[in-house]
Image (tube, rainbow, N blue to C red; front, side, top):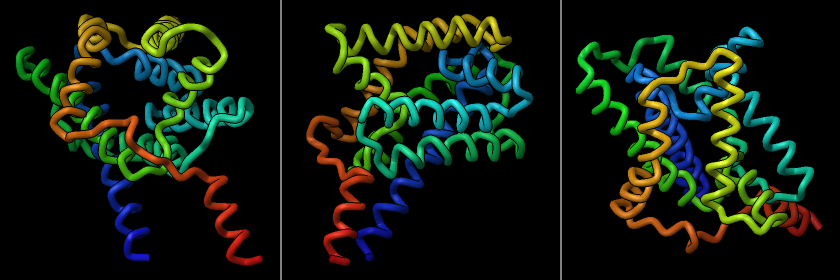
Length: 216
């Protein structure tokens, strides 16, 4: 139980830091990342906050992943639910500053991207699965000859285009993040000594099977 509680706590810390990183890129006010542009656009169309739209989009993606038999973990569900809640908590309580100075804004944006990468290493490192959007990349990868980089770029490009036409905010920072986010995420992974290929995940179906064996 102690080990389970420790993993649960680490996963939650990772989700909170992930939301903090996203909020920092939003409050940098130089244009948002492609997925955040999409979430804002969905929110504007449905009368939702960015956090609520993040949850809704994540839920829909999980359903798609489930239909295509992609593994779902506790971290997958937590990423869908908690990140949106934490984003709204941070934004509504003005816990992340908005700088008028462009240099400070870009500094915060870069720090936010780094934090997104570092927090991913934290919550994925628990071994309970990854985020819904990573699962969607996996679904497409298994069914097409395309590379992961091409799939991810294609999905984010579509998210950006649809988000823009729904009213999401696009700026120079959007292009900067699209180009540099991979660098900051990889840097965070290296500093955290994190290799995603070495993680052995426990998924929801594994948990159910274990519970059934114990009750049999």
